[in-house]
Image 1 (cartoon, rainbow, N blue to C red):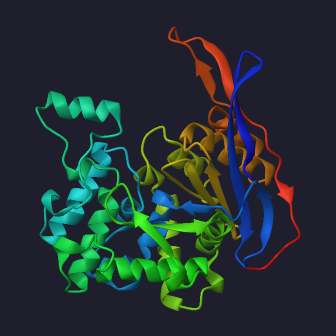
Image 2 (cartoon, rainbow, N blue to C red):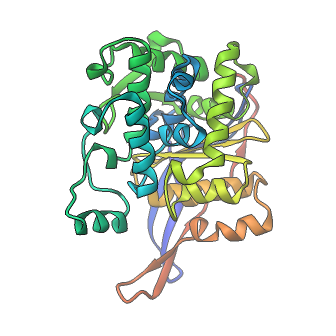
Length: 341
């Protein structure tokens, strides 16, 4: 059963509770700490993006189309639609000889309110490039072209691109391909439901790919994680948790959130993966939980802890801008008898 992991306080009184589950796993598959239901079947959502980028590198498509680290990072992104993001996605599409109309991710306004206002003032309208998943889809288009497959159908579950993604998910999670549970994500491509501890295991292996059998996969993982920590602003955006935690921790932490209260972290210097699922699906609880997990695992220096304080204990403000409460993580990571997967 899920447990209370974050509370919302008004004054010093608890007003709301967010329940959830947390799994901490090492690269050998050992469950180190657990909160709630660590085997809860959990849709990975956008936390899967670093894994979805593996076939792009592994196949040689990234080299063929001259992807740099910034472009690889945006392929792993849930970006804000800022100009720094749209320019990089457009650069990828230009080299592919394609345009925004070839992206099958759909259209929504930029997550960045400032960027959206700027777009409207210029008389523009959102396009698929502004979709937070446009980088991932641009990478999938590159892979589709490299495989000489139907680029118009790259988002379909039976397409070679998505079959290669499924192979990467199976390889990193240890879940056999025929046992993978799928549904359709918000951007139209398949997403995978995994036990929470398997999701953490994937991030442990992203953090330390030494246990992966394929040398090509190991090299692809290293290139992806290097790109993400080198250009964290590409993975999310300005004043966003993914960006700030990776920048603050200076290459120690890989961080990627997903919809419906999913958040995953990898400790790059320790080969440990952390997967969090907030039961009510709200991200307001996943950020404090993620920052608290890093604190309890001894990842953060006092200075880093202070820099992430606003994420770990975010203020609740009223309409006058006055602080009237805060969100507060209340869990304690519980050691479990190590069980290898």
